[in-house]
Amino acid sequence: MESAKYEIAQTAARMVVEEGLEYGPAKRRAVKQLGLNVRTGLPDNDTVEDAVREYIALFCAETQPAELAALRKLALTWMERLVQFRPYLAGAVWHGTATRLSDIYIQLFCDDSKSAEIALIENKVDYGARTVTGFNGEPVEALSLSSVSRELGEAIGVHLMVYDHDDMRGALRPDAKRRTPRGDTSAVRALLENPAP
Image (tube, rainbow, N blue to C red):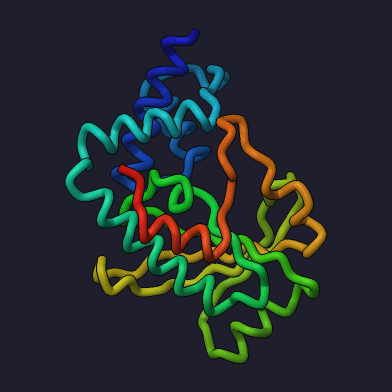
């Protein structure tokens, strides 16, 4: 059973890096591609993330650091534009496993849940809104837009997850790997100035 989970994680990691899939869909597609029973136990996201890091180290070591820096720079641009909504970067761009195919996830902690959307409208930003499951398991509004990265020369998906200001309590608790799960503008700036080796 553990070998099946390992195989799923490795196959999913390739899909995450090469196709830009999110972990959930990549794991499900990996099960199908490997011809496993749909009830096969799936690896957890930490296992898939470890496999993604291995895949990047093996196949993308030359290109991924510059792509990650470009994504972080674009994320910082949006965070600075939306600074009044207490933005935090999360996901692969924050954790360092993003490639040019990865989307950017910025969490906003607002006093008024509609204020971020109003700000986008006032600034004539074209976006789509939908409801997704947030980090606390509750439904949250996701405002999705496309933004061009000059360094990468292509449009990148940027998803603004709108949380209530009170959701910030506990949001910075370390995750299972004892890492900070998200970072504010100063933390993202620090990553850009001193990228990890």
